[in-house]
Length: 321
Ligand code: CP
Ligand code: NVA
Image (tube, rainbow, N blue to C red):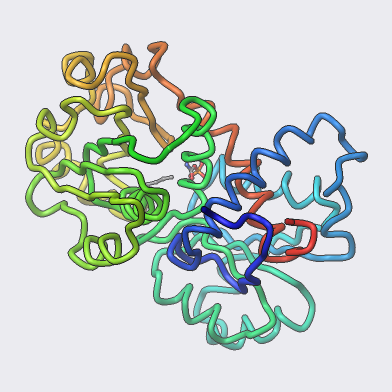
């Protein structure tokens, strides 16, 4: 059984795989708790957990959900938010390692959205006192899937043994979904066209991390991946930074749209998920997006609670127990 009372201090959250299965279970428990406590406002048990602490936001790509919810999360935990200029901190002005070594002299944590996962890792490795949180790189989007599994817990109760189909690009969201599914005992089917499959390393990592028989299976046909599953997840065909490939991608992914026909192959009552932003008429039809099966705004809402839990686990592990 998962021990949810002991806290393993973690410096960074660059990947879901920075957590073990017990950490991730704990994080979901904590997220549910802070969500329920939010109604207490300043009386919430964690309302001053980050008092006197500074958390910087460093976003090199656009963001609505991640940035807004991190800023609210820090403030509702009693901390202070510092906005950093990406051109000053991740540009050519000075080496990334020097930026990190400056920041750790003043602040406690940085939430970073950037392109290269290696740059993020270099940033985190350069400053041993600075907590670094991945707010999305080209390779992974770990904060997203904390919210996703919090949402699924709310809808399903137990997660273990459920099956999700991810239809589309084997991208950052698909990678973090594979990692988290493995740690939570959830089966994942991923359907992608040739050239856009999940990287082999992600397959290996997920197989290695899997608990309770969680299985990751890759498919070419979307219909095969979706048959009988409990939820269908998709994401944009063209991620940020890949805009020049948009036309080529529209053709490559034409057979991977989540529409009513595809949803009808899933289990009756299956849920529809999307990290957002969504492109109606591309990866999902408007009718599926707006259907009762769609839990996309529950996912968006839970970004706040998931990220509060992450901040507590990294910055205030005692308050996280
Ligand atoms: N899903 C998500 O990360 O949204 P933003 O890009 O708006 O932060
Ligand atoms: N895969 C998308 C996710 C956006 C939240 C992107 O990287 O643009």
